[in-house]
Amino acid sequence: MAETLEFNDVYQEVKGSMNDGRLRLSRQGIIFKNSKTGKVDNIQAGELTEGIWRRVALGHGLKLLTKNGHVYKYDGFRESEFEKLSDFFKTHYRLELMEKDLCVKGWNWGTVKFGGQLLSFDIGDQPVFEIPLSNVSQCTTGKNEVTLEFHQNDDAEVSLMEVRFYVPPTQEDGVDPVEAFAQNVLSKADVIQATGDAICIFRELQCLTPRGRYDIRIYPTFLHLHGKTFDYKIPYTTVLRLFLLPHKDQRQMFFVISLDPPIKQGQTRYHFLILLFSKDEDISLTLNMNEEEVEKRFEGRLTKNMSGSLYEMVSRVMKALVNRKITVPGNFQGHSGAQCITCSYKASSGLLYPLERGFIYVHKPPVHIRFDEISFVNFARGTTTTRSFDFEIETKQGTQYTFSSIEREEYGKLFDFVNAKKLNIKNRGLKEGMNPSYDEYADSDEDQHDAYLERMKEEGKIREENANDSSDDSGEETGVLASVLSMGMVRHSSLWPGLESPLGQSWVPG
Image (cartoon, rainbow, N blue to C red):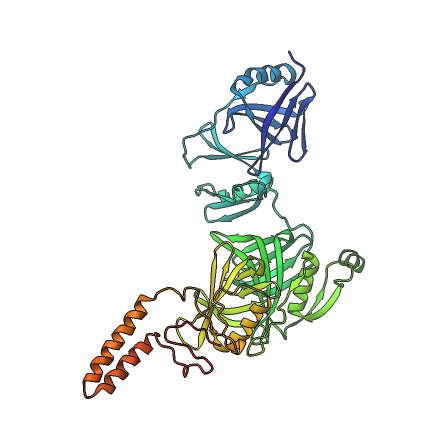
């Protein structure tokens, strides 16, 4: 009997990613070395309590359980290697290597068993699937329902985001099966837990997304949003960017937190957390740390006692803890002097902020577009009125955003900003000698034949000829021109001073 066994092409599944490595069995125990990360699993022979052999996607697999509840699974064995492994386990580990098949019926009604660090969903005596509870990042309960969310692995091509279990009600008094299920999961899950006291608490902040009033508790590694209906824990590692944006009315401020991955509530995903503050709301804040700890951790960015505007305190604390810069509007100034533009996106009206490196729209739905992902921008005619225009952005991935109903007075400011940022303007058609604020633009398809326009011209000519033959031709000619004008086929310079557009040529307000 060999003293050692070695297998070179063995795989270990880590949060949805299959990592290859080398497995070595000896009298002392089992060692697996991950080829990609170099991580080593070292299982002492005396710790082993169970060995299971089963058919899996990558050939056959070995599942090992230890006394302290840890589970190790290795795949990629050949069927012919079972006898060799079984004899080795009997001889050196005094264990029977049991053969156990997985259930492949496809049923979704079964029994959940908790053993060690595994949740096993079984039908009869056969497991359907197993969930390592250390991979669970969040466990939430609803009426007869438990939802498990998982830590994500960046190396996995496909990731499991969540699993929901329906738990039928029970007749037993005093035992809530949903809570019992959740507590079993939480006892082994790697869930963000609030340990110790919060550094500080902001009470009853107005939140636009997700909507409601929330208490925000600031912890060293995560942010806790607590509302009447929902409760969120947001690790600082998921915060991408921070924005502080003045409202157009100059009396309020938006504080926007960009998140990846987003916070979830059922099927809804919130990629942005948007808080709204009144500028004249002040607060005195005392951090729940002594002065030496504050100085050591924040190096002068925060002090134990602070006071000022509420939005300043929130943004200052968040900046220090997340360790990211706060993005504010750049040097853009609209027609009214504001740093944003009123417009509509999809069904709602909101504000578009041109930033130094992108655009952000608040608040429903919030959109952030970086300049480096923009393929081109387009100035288009307003669809509802001649007193407004649309601003279109298309990304390199082909996604199109249309911000509509922008007042025509904003056109010159926005055009100058886009031009200064060297963004590609799709319908640039500058006429020499014109004021840049009143550049005349032509659509990208201006050279294409417009059959409808040509037909309207022909009908107009025919009617005009017929009208010339009659005695009261003036009335009919006026009627024809009015109908054509109402359909937007003729643009007259008197409509918009400073523009002289020939019949049928596209234009954008200045």
